[in-house]
Length: 184
Ligand SMILES: [Zn+2]
Image (cartoon, rainbow, N blue to C red; front, side, top):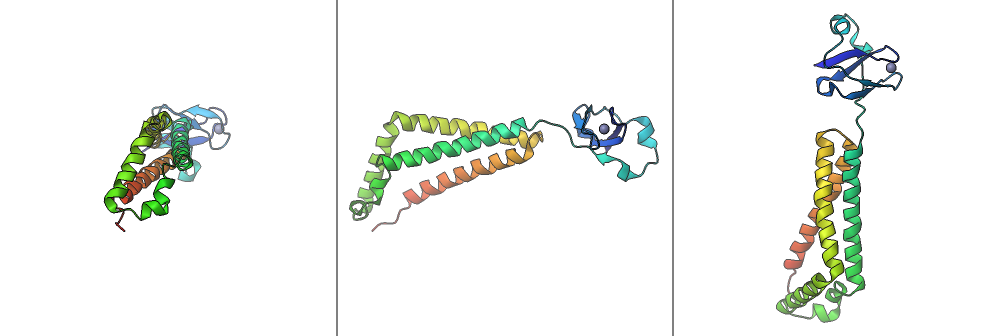
């Protein structure tokens, strides 16, 4: 079902979903903001007007929730990129790429990895980055889901959700591949 009413500014007939009753709706014709009534205008509800007269008017919801989700996801992406670059620069990851490392036995390699992981985890910058990462992930996911659910900024919310999930998948994949690194 839908609610039909007249634009307060240009008096053209508008139509919104029932779910948008009481919400702001942009007039398709004159772009003015209307508050959608709770019920259809009785003259329009029963009028034998051609259905194409009723242009779906898009709810004028602010996209702010979805945009916050997207920004949080992008910031999370930046934090993880920074962390990886920092780890390489400080030798925590590059130590695993050397000839020395590849000639080690599997157990010794695991020891090197564990030692490097423990070393880097002790760095305040890494602790701060992990905390920021987790906070931004929860924040970004929360806002993205809320943005989708409330249709407030659907597209940025969807983009934020995809970025967050991709980063999480990438992390899971890299953890699994580190653990399953074949010997020799
Ligand atoms: Zn209008």
